[in-house]
Image (cartoon, rainbow, N blue to C red):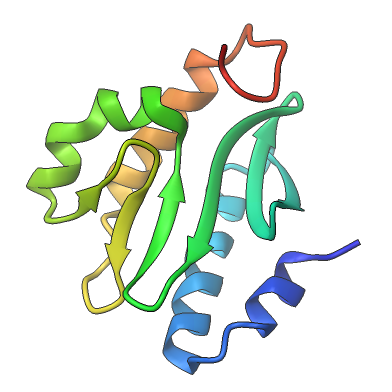
Length: 123
């Protein structure tokens, strides 16, 4: 089974590798009850086998997916923090700091919002 370390080790750019490791370690340390797994070639965090957040790496940014509901709930704050987002991804540019307070609130929102969810994705 792949681990986050395997995923991180495949990132070619050392700065992107370090930033990705930092963010994943922060999530793991801040939310130690979340499960970890690699799925669809990206690190994911789960709670009672339901998706909470996934991360992916691109040339220009580290992307986080909290599902559409998470994006919609925090769209104004995401933009105010200086990040772009699509319907499913928040884009954290490599050259900007991570707003860990915002990241914390998005993940906490998903944990609470999906507390009774019995499926991996929201329906």
